[in-house]
Image 1 (cartoon, rainbow, N blue to C red):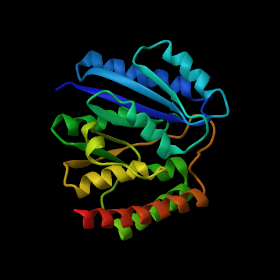
Image 2: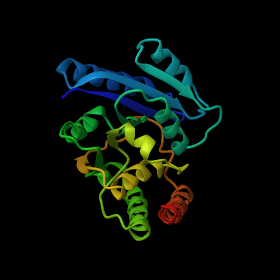
Image 3: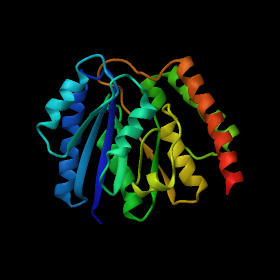
Length: 241
């Protein structure tokens, strides 16, 4: 079964990484199409108000491949806004996301494709070796966020920031988060609505250059508040039904 795929890649001050990451991603997409697993693809590149030459590099890349869709925010609005901007520009039947830092490769998305080829509505990846790549502090923050999610939302499913899903879900599952919690909001909503969501182990590697934009107690605290607000929204939505 060949599918069509939109890949949303979000970037903030990733001028050092964006060219090599996009070239590698396009090479993988072209190989998948040659193998017959993709019948079409699109790569949406969202610059989230970078202060470096990220968007200039994106425009140069878009001139090389017609399947690339360049987009930009005038000011930095955060991962949540960048992801939703990218989603709005998607045209293919299935959607996935990739960061522009090179930590998640298309080869990991390929691991998710088997589930949707079998009929799943969504495949969600969970990292198996993040401590070895990002260290104990990142693991500590991620574990804390997961515990908050377990308490507030009652979800025990392993999930991290990479997934593949039917684009139709975006119409059925409205996203309200403005932080990188949006990457977890979609699978949580899909699970609660009893869509066929499958978990698949994936790997992450060290970023090629620069530093993470999401590390920091302040950012994690904001996401924690988003989780709690999301819980309140879910309760309100249930009352309205």
